[in-house]
Amino acid sequence: MTPAMLEKANANKAAMGAENVEFRAGQIEALPVDDNSIDVIMSNCVINLAPDKLSVFHEAFRVLKPGGRVSISDIVTEGDFSEELRADLAQWAECVTGAIDAEIYTDLMRQAGFTNIQIVSKENANELIQPREGMPTIYSARITATKPV
Image (cartoon, rainbow, N blue to C red; front, top):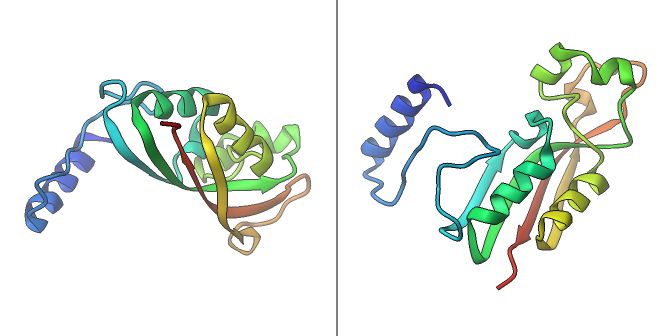
């Protein structure tokens, strides 16, 4: 988040009268919160941008309270990108080639310690993206999981 994004978020929070919301600047691989302090993590199309997704999932697991939940909306694939596409930084910036196969994605969550991992929905997103040679099927998915009690 940029300072301008934080300002806007806090202005929206004030306009809504939300008292139980706090916004903090930080990195997804090093969240500025204590261990076992968060009930729910919601993420919307961010993890696909992280090169080290396992670190992201370990960090989410660290900050969640036992019994805490994650609800993630993200871009995943069925298959993998060609090396040429994976190296295309413009495609990364467009939230395309940072995506990984849904099975690998959920396996990384499992490695981080999450249980009850479910792909709740998976919508084909190829019509939103210019298909190219070496591109797998791309999905917008909602994935949920819990930290064991």
